[in-house]
Length: 282
Length: 229
Figure 1 (cartoon, each protein chain N blue to C red):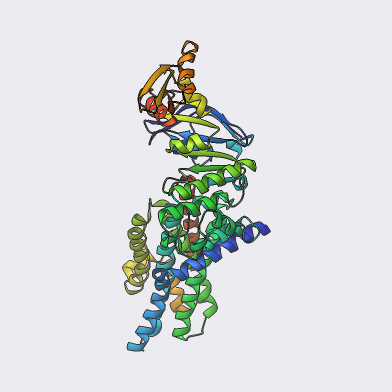
Figure 2 (figure 1 turned 90 degrees about the vertical axis):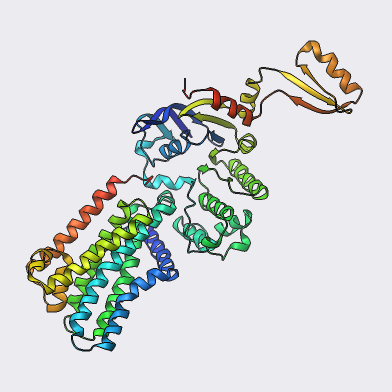
């Protein structure tokens, strides 16, 4: 769906994107992670033809982006930092406007508004909505045309856990329907939960790329398991075949209340990599 | 023009219309010169034609420049213009939709001034000239909206420039030396046509040249901006 090969972008003397190569398969959820200023937004803007890259090649839906036309944009859904909503129009009017622009059947948007929990705010002007409500409405606007490729930039950053869960469910449902999702997020639990693949960007370079679970196990150099028994005593044992007997002993006595692996979660991996690596794509 | 394009322009027009009706400051800007004309008529009947024409010139210059600049700048700043482009709307469809709506409001308020003045002579020529002047002003306003970084910057620059253009025509009518310069501005030509109820070939050429100038300026500034802006 997206093929990026050796793409670089420089602003004056600052490298925003440095020789990045990766691909996103059709129907997968790809998460682009990275600290602030890592180049995530620049990369999204390059892929969506908002800015031009200096070097490299990009194909979106099999088409070189140099040949991308305005009409091709209707296959995309984009939710970016600014919410892209009309303040003086109501939720309903905003969505109806896009419904008519895309020439969709009436009420396509109303159903989505209900799904994201904004049914009560239907007739409220956008200027009267909270930040989280605007974010949900912006999400509806981005998916109203059932896009083949959906770009989401921090889609749940201002949402409460219930609304976040709703948005996650809709994203998963979209994937089932064949939509490819390109997600930029700071929320590592969101990335772990949703993404089939992630790319970790730092100083403009891609420092890791792949399945988030496999990446986490790959960095489990300690390979230790900590067991906590009913008395609250914890014991850390190296995860080796020779120690299998010790583990069995704990379980036989029905003594175990908690088991923890030394495997990093995505958040720990993110911190480790972004503080360690300089940001090259080699 | 394809049916698809017509639908998009109609929807943008309709959205803009709702937006104008809900924006009191915008509405007031469209109504300020008709209100001033009524006010002037109530306190001073003599010389109302000349003063009324002055308000009419101001009306075809100031509101379209400031409001178009502000509308375009707001769309850019809030990301709605970007959303529209990703909804498959071509920039030309957006500018035509917004321009038609704002132009309609401005043209209506110009007609109101005409009705208040009550002189039907040469109404066709006056309205045609007003239409061209409104288009020139809207092109200039849109260019300012595209050029400036945000709404905070656009307000002072568009207000100053529109005031300069509007007042230049008034000053030019009162002072010969000023007129030597301002007679090449569409605002001065518009004022002259409004007052004399006739158009010369030279005046038509000046109007046309002004239109071309603003169109080229708009295209140049538009091309300098990329989609992300």
